[in-house]
Amino acid sequence: MNKIRLAGLSMIVLAAAASRLIPHPPNFTPIAAIALFGGATFSDKRLAFLVPLLAMALSDIVIGGFSIVTPFVYTSFSAIVCIGLLLRASKDPIRIGGASVAGALLFFVVTNFAVWLVAGYYPKTLAGLEACFVAAIPFFRNTLLSDLLYTGLLFGLWFLAERRWPSLAASHATSS
Image (cartoon, rainbow, N blue to C red; front, top):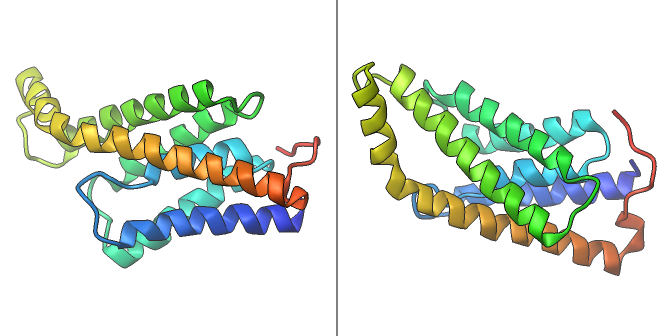
């Protein structure tokens, strides 16, 4: 990966992560969009995971975002990077939108299951699990809307930047 492309991608990811620091509605953050974008755009798979996860960790340090469910959040974040890896072959808007919806659903299921499993708010019964997911439904709307918005912004801005500055475009060789 050329250094200009790496710097540009890293700056976009860090800027998106920094947007978590400004006031926002609950669950209206660029978390999943960053993961999806990282997986789809960093040619080195290690960087596809490392840069978005590091950006997330830095913003979590600033906002105090660590909790008992954090390992599950980061696991879902990593799984969304994997969804992004699947976008590498074709980054058409329909596939990107579908991947964004899939990421939002994955994040919802994994993190709310984690709340039920380890946070101690709900009984460890099927009824408790159901109550946990039902209570989380109002937050899912913001998750889905923000994922679609931020995914569109990240991919759209990067597409425009690559067209404006061809040195940002990926080479045809990929790394593992």
